Each structure stands twice: as C-alpha cells, then as structure tokens.
Amino acid sequence: MSGMSWDISPMANSPDISQIRAAIEREMEAKGFSRRSLSSAAGLSQTAVRDLLDRTENPGIGTLHKIAEALQIPFESINGSQQVPLLGEVGAGGVIAYFKDDHEAEFAPRPPLAPGPMMALAVKGDSMLPKYEPGDVIYVRRDHDGVLPAYLGRYCAVHLVDGGTYLKILSAGSTPGRYTLRSLNAADMENCEVVWAAPVLFTMQAQVTAKPSL
Image 1: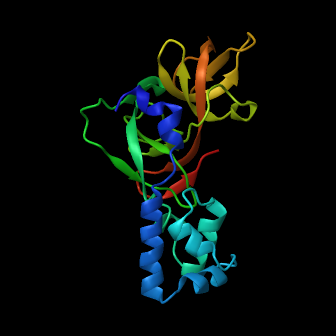
Image 2: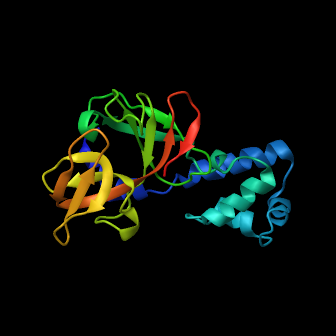
C-alpha cells in the first residue's frame, strides 16, 4: 500500500452495517434471543434491536457494546473489526516505509478493547531498541490533520511536508508551528514542518503478549 492509505477518509470509514447485522442475528439465533428479548437484556428500548437490524445505518458504539454484553460475546465479534490492516514497516531511524500497491494485503490482530479504525506497522530490525523490538506491531489511528497538544512527548507516526513519515517522539520545536522529532538511537530532527501526527495507541509484542504504549 502507498502513503495514500493514510488519507483521513479511509481511516474514518465505519464497519459494514450488513456484517454487524449478520453477526448479531447469528448470535441471537444461537442463544435463543428474539429482537424484543435482546433489547430488554441489553437495557435498550423495546424496538432498539429491530431498528438496528432493519433501519439504522449507523448504530452507536454504546448500543453495540450493550448488545455484545447481553449476547456475552466480545464487542469486536459484532463490529466487523477483528483485524487491523498492516500498512508498512518501521526501520532504521524510525522511517516508516509503506508497502507498495502490489504488496499482498496483510493484517494484524486487533488489540483488546480497541474498537474503531486503526492501522498497524511492523518493526523491522533493532534500530528502535529498547523501546520497540523487531517483530513488534505498532497500532496508530489518524483521523485529522495537524498536531494536538496532547501528542507532545509521545511516540507518534509523523508525516512531514517533505513527504517523509517517521515514528518518533514528538516535541515542540524552537520555532512556533514547528516540531522536533526525537528517538533513542538517532539524532534529533529539529524544527520540522508537520502535516499530521498520529499517536501510538498500542503495541503488540512479537511474543504475542501486549504492552500498553506510554
């Protein structure tokens, strides 16, 4: 995939409503729920499940969570988001290299309790040690341009005006509106002009055990 995969629109797409409906109906049949009884068990209005299955095109996350709890299944089982697309690799210097368009599509497991659109990056080589190890999968979400103040001091995927994309610690630059990108094993990139930044939300270790991102 190319850098265009980081465009805002694809990342903001909602899960396919037909998949959500099919998953709910499958679980309802397996567990003996009618539409009204499932609505009641989920603490929703009597017509909530009927409306979701027949009318609603964009059900709220809160509603889906309640239905998943009533069905006693993971939220991810009904929201159509079991996997996350793997867009590229993080290599030496924190450079993010996107897979090319002819690269066979790859996916990474979705982290626990992490609904919504996300993208994944695989760590290649040992240049990101000791923070990230080879084979770690880093998850980010980007849904706006620019930089929010809360991102400062955090590891972020950062896209620059010159076209480069990096995984670095984002810091304020010495010039207003510019930023310094830091890492443990490379020189600082000072006063960069940033198009967008997307903080790391989660890291899945190569050993398949999870560690939260700080």
